[in-house]
Amino acid sequence: MKETANILLVDDEPGMLRYIRTLLEVDDYKVTTASRGEEAVERVNKGLHPDLVLLDLLMPGIDGLETLEQLRRLQPGIKVVILSCVGDTRKVVQAMRLGAHDYLTKPFQKAELDAVIDQCLGTNQQNYPGEVEELADDVFFVAASPIMRKLRSEAALVANVDIPVLMLGESGTGKEVMARLIHKLSPRAHRTFLKVNCAAVPADLLESELFGYEAGAFTGANHPKPGKFELCNKGTILLDEIGEMTTNLQAKLLHILQDGQFSRLGSRSVIKADVRILAATNINIPEALATKRLREDLYYRLNAFTLHVPPLRERKEEIPILLKHFMARQAERYARPPLPLSPPLLQACAEYPWPGNLRELSNFIKRYLVLGDEKLAINELRPKGDGSGAQFDPASKDAANPVGGLKSLARSAKDGAEAEAIAKALDETNWNRKQAAALLSY
Image 1 (cartoon, rainbow, N blue to C red):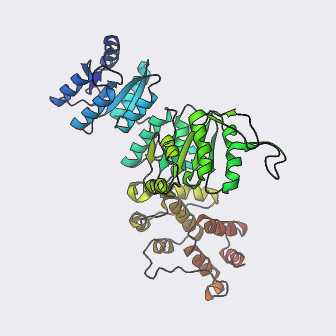
Image 2: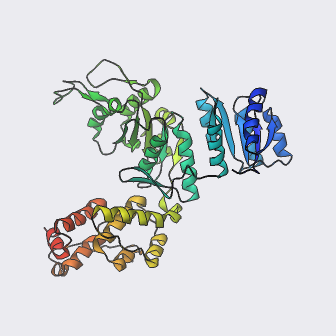
Image 3: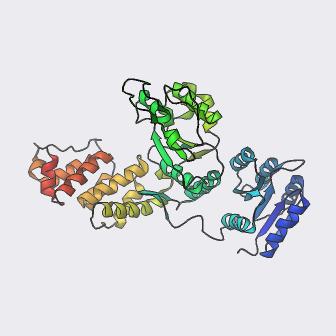
C-alpha cells in the first residue's frame, strides 16, 4: 500500500465522511476532509496537493461536477474518484468526460474502495494483466503506451455504466477489440457479444439481419428468422461502420436506443430488447452530420461516451510487442517456427508509418513468415521511389524462378486475402515454394 498517500475526502454527509475516513486511516493514508465542494477547492487553492480526491457527486452549494472542474483547473493532473448513488449514471458519465479517473457507487465495501485506490495510485497492476490481454480467440488488447493505458482505464470505467459507446478511429486501429474489452469488463460479460459490419451487408438486407423477419415478409422469406438484437438479448452488440447504415435504418435504430423496442419485418408485434449497443466508425463525423449521412439525433444517442482509438503511428512503443505477438500467433497457426525480429527489422518497423495500422502490421508479419526473407521484409517498409509495385506474372521471367515469383507476388500482397492465398498455397504444398509458386500461377 502507498502508506504516505494524501487523500482529500469530500462528502456533505457526516456519517459517510466518518465511515470512509476510518476505512482510509486503517491503511495509514493521510486523510484531509471537506464537507462541501467550496471547502475542497479552497484547500487545494491554498496549496494542498492530494494524491487522490474522493469526491461526492451530490452536494449542496457547488456540486461534485463543478467541484471537479474547479479542482482540475487548479491542478490539471489531479486524480479524482467520484462517489455516486444508484441512478446517477448520466452525472457519472459527465464526470468521466470532465476527467474523473473512476467512480464508486454508494454503499460500497472496503474491498471496492481498496481496489479503486490501488488502481488510481498505481500501487498494483491488477487492471493491466501483462503486456497482452487476451479477450477471445485471436483477439487481444495491448496497453503498453500511456495513451492506450489511459484508453483502457476509460473503457473499464464506461464498461460498468450501461450506456452506448461510440468508438472513433482509423481503419485497422482496433475498434472491435475495444468493443470486446468493454464487453468483457462489463456485467454482461457472460452474455452474448455480436458484431455486425454495416458496410459488409447490403443495405436492403441489413434491416432483416438486425431485426429479423416473419414468414412472408418478402419474397423468399419462407420461415421466420430472429434478428441480431433478439439473439443478443441481455448481451452486447457492436455496430461496426455505423456510418454506412441508411438513414431510414438509422431511424429504426434510434427507436431501440430510446425505447428498447423493435418489430420484425412483416410483424406488428413489439419485441423488447435489452441490448447494450456499441458503435464504431472511421468516418468524418462533422462532415457526415453536415451532409445528413449520419442522423444528428442518432449521433447524440450513440455519443453518450466516445473513445478515440489512436493510430499505430501514435503508439509506436507498442510495435515490438505487437510484432512478437503476431509472429507467435501466425507461427502457431501455420505450424512454422517463429522467425527472428532483428534490430534492423525492428528499426524499419518503428520508422514505418503503418497507414493500415494493426491490420497492416499483422499482414506484414504473415508475409514475412511465409517468405522467410528479412531483407525483402525490410525493403517492403521503405518508401517506394516510383510508387510502383511488382506484380506476379506467370509469363514473366520470374515464372522461371518460382521462389522469385512468390516474392514478387508477396510484394504486392497488401491485403489479407492475398497473404492468405500465399499461406494456403504453401500449406497445400507442405511449404514447397516451387510447387506453391506454380499453384499460384493458375
